[in-house]
Length: 129
Image 1 (cartoon, rainbow, N blue to C red):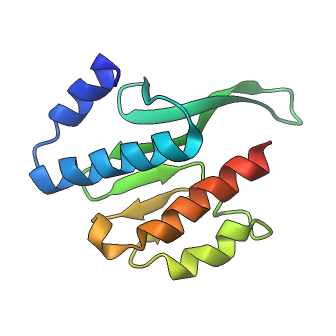
Image 2 (cartoon, one colour):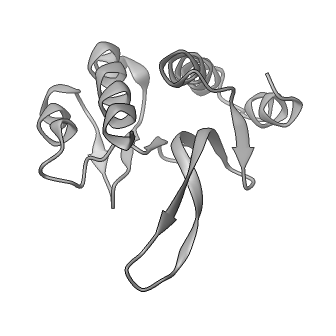
């Protein structure tokens, strides 16, 4: 694992949160086939994609990612805001969570069904092709 990612994880104070992050890093690395890398100072990313908006604005962003925040672990790239995406229906099966603008917030991994999360990650990667 990248030294910067390792340092980010090692800086997490809660041992339970650190363990949850390590499990998620392993799940995302296996599911995406990508090595974890830091994107900015607080997001562990797995693969990148280039986007171009109709306005002409463009940039790069992680295909999948996660971040340790004070209140929850945030997962990115799951396409949950798109009501036509298969993950929009799976969100009801994942367990205790909150959602933001396309993000999934999970307080503890024991609150969710990891198999459903893994399916959501794979669905997202398939739809990105």
